[in-house]
Amino acid sequence: MKKIGIALSGGGALGIAHLGVLKAFRDGGVAIDCIAGTSVGAVVATCYAFGVPMEDVVKVAKELSWFKLSRMSYSMTGLAANTAMGEAVAKLIGGDKRIEEANIPLALVATDISTGEKVVFRSGSVVTAVTASTCVPGLFAPISYGDRLLVDGGLVENLPVAELAAMGADITVGVNLARWRNYERPRHALGVLVNSMDIMIHHQSVSHGAAASVIIEPHVEKYTWSSWDKADELLAEGRRAAITAVMKVRTLAGRRRRSNRRAKEAKRGWYTRAARWLAGMFGDLG
Image 1 (cartoon, rainbow, N blue to C red):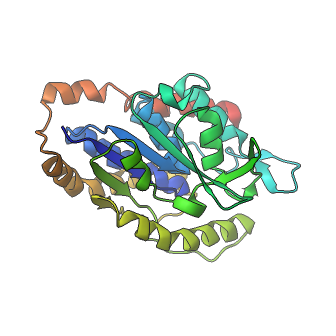
Image 2 (image 1 turned 60 degrees about the vertical axis):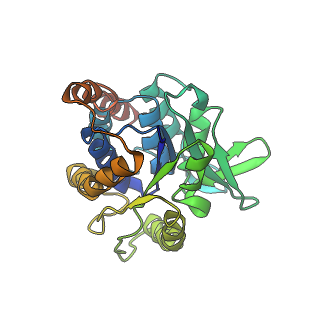
């Protein structure tokens, strides 16, 4: 049977749309065999790979803000520390597990800010990998990893389709949140940083997405990286964008739709437990 892999791009709060995409695959009876993610895509990919329920993730996402995800830092290399994100993911998956313990192959992408090299985590600490992949440069201080200084993977590979083939995927699906974007006039330093990254990663995301068997590009142009309060709308946009893609993937894979019984069993899997738990967890952080 052909293996299906999915790559999830970065995009801050827009990453909630990834959950809608994954829900469409679940409801369409198509299982994912391996997954890769960059930045917020790394968070969602990790939750999926470790079987954390989507409904719990959505509930927590509605309570998020950049303030809750930041900790004051005295570093000369960033305005804040990104430790809260790593702690959140660790609590969600039941501790600082190793990537190789995931239910399916998982790859997370970061950037070495000292060399410009892409760093792909396929083993090792989940907390280290997620914290590095989501470390927005300038906002968060880089993560020390051996002799490397790691920041957001979006600088080098915002849509990590290339990592899927290395994990054995025959059919690759890319979810690009950077395709449809509008830019707001920045009102503060974070806005300048976010727009700068958005503009930088837009073209490389389109280029990387061209290598995918199927590309999904949710219409998120009405939202921003900080639209945590628009979780329901972003979830719907992701699901809407994925419906046709699910049918195409099923055809390419030669798979029949899973029975209703199996689909109902899947609903009680990772999609039912992450937002409920995260809501309480981020409440503690705030």
